[in-house]
Image (cartoon, rainbow, N blue to C red; front, side, top):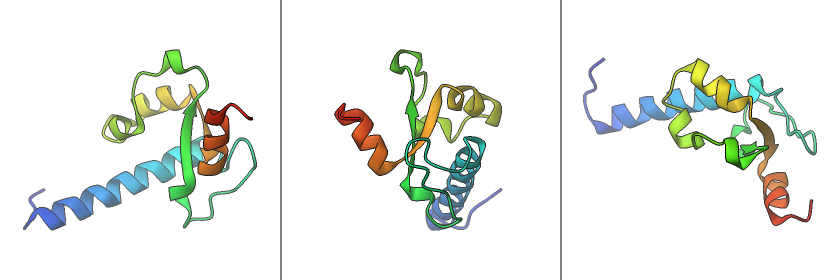
Length: 95
């Protein structure tokens, strides 16, 4: 698919990547595994994916969004979906 300009390309990438993240959130249950905050169709930006065992981490989300869905699912199976607040608490080791 050709694009008229870089703006069109970037807009298409943003749309695809947003759709991929929503698909990943829903694959992981559609809510924060810690506090239960639910995806409501507009708040996808608050969700992160946290590796349960960091030693099993193969890819960052930025790399996963351009891989095949099967590859993404394999990595997501090693992670939990958490809201940004809970993710910070998990990493602060106060949790």
